[in-house]
Image (cartoon, rainbow, N blue to C red):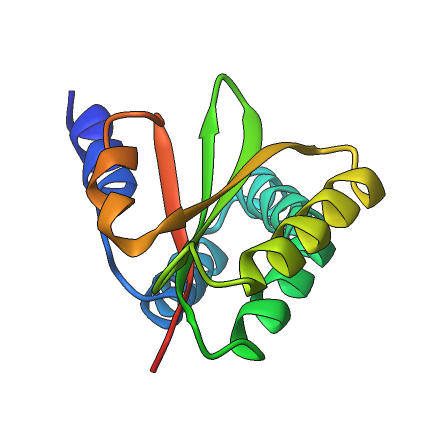
Length: 144
């Protein structure tokens, strides 16, 4: 029961990446103090798996860089349902002609990376509407 509660707190947390990194390091330090080589090796296996999956974020990095270089992008999210990753870009105004450029970028990114299932480019006023649409939502970019 405590594990389930802890998982829910983590899933629903808006804690910064930096804080999660610090917590992860603290967890590794605690496991390193244990006298059990088996337990330590299990943790090392887990950390290695994390580091491998962390390095698989090339398309996310491309998306973040794209957003940073555009003045009218307010935020971007990675969202998913049933393990299918998508991304959502929120603009100040989707009637702006730049939405065509953003769609072109999104189609090219999706074609380049097989793990992107779909994408949406929405007006910032639609931001609240995605809250109930996806089981997982991670903000990866916010202007300012």
